[in-house]
Image (cartoon, rainbow, N blue to C red; front, side, top):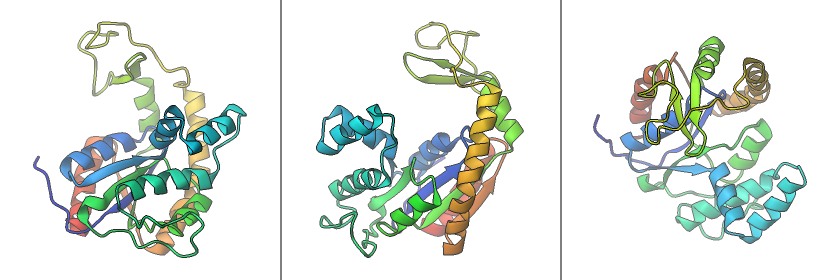
Length: 240
């Protein structure tokens, strides 16, 4: 499948339950639309901690104390990243009273990963950088649970296999190293049911907020392969 050019900047959030395949969709979107970049709050946080930036040192001490990194700190990380790419004005600050005017250049398009997760975080983000599409990825819970039951990982590399649709060439062995595959500690059904319930509770007000703004679009499918063509089509209609 070929690539497509965007005609204006897309600022997207993918919302979906754990195990729904947000990472897969983000990767496919970036291959299909090369002007799209991923901005991951988790990666930015890890990068700042590893590079011992002022924000990273502060965040590390908060996490070591067993606390969650405050929303304002995550917003600063995201904002610093967007400013470094010149996608928002360099003088933009988290304390600004009005949203910034982000670049409408197609190369300033991004998928925001890992933030916001709550309606409060979304309101803080909207006050700073207006997103223009929120995609709600829906896959039935029983499909997600069966997907997790079939998931095996090569812990040292992070490679993930699934015996249903991405099986290793040799059962139980990593394709590259031949080392044994293992299950993630938290990949048991009860843990996952709890995570999915928690997601439902926090995502409902988040999705309602974006629906009121008129930028929510929902796509349903039992697999990433069912969802991707629908997502590409809608995205092209809006931005390409």
